[in-house]
Amino acid sequence: EIVLTQSPVTLSLSPGERATLSCRASQSVSSYLAWYQQKPGQAPSLLIYGASNRATGIPARFSGSGSGTDFTLTISSLEPEDFAVYYCHQRSNWPLTFGQGTRLEI
Amino acid sequence: EVQVVESGGGLVQPGGSLRLSCAGSGFTFSTYWMSWVRQAPGKGLEWVADIRGDGGEKQYVDSVKGRFTISRDNAKNSLYLQMNSLRAEDTAVYYCARDWSRSFDPWGQGTLVTVSS
Image (tube, rainbow over all chains, first blue to last red):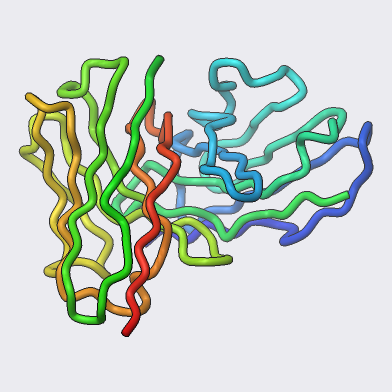
């Protein structure tokens, strides 16, 4: 099983600041890495697929990078609606797995 | 609009059974892998199972193998999860999601399964 480790667990920032979230895989997942955002009481929603491709309707302030075992989600300038939990997810091998999440808080 | 909608959750006793359903619309259902993902209260996301578009291949997380069965009816644009021998640790919100470009999109709103006596 591929283990995804996200860091930090909690990130405290202010609107307008830059956020950098990390996801490290226990073995290579190539570029089969996705990022999701989940707000309280809501289902997760897709942000980034294929490590660096923004999903439809996702603002340009969200960007993804990396390949192999090390990945980064960057939010260039935080908006109030960006404070949420973010999960990475690998689609390289079964069982499909998620990171434990990073809580982005004000 | 592409969407998936789950139903069938509820309260069930340990050892009991429940069948979840998911209706897809706005896309050619039969051409997509579909998945179930769950989230225990206050916890992270856990992939449970997925099924190929023609139903010919299925995969499960180890913790549900032999107890849960994923299936689909493409004529009805529907996905199912038959859950048997339920345990307290199966308590979670269960999400249906379409597999798209090696990601999950969209997700349904989720259906809560509570296993308790």
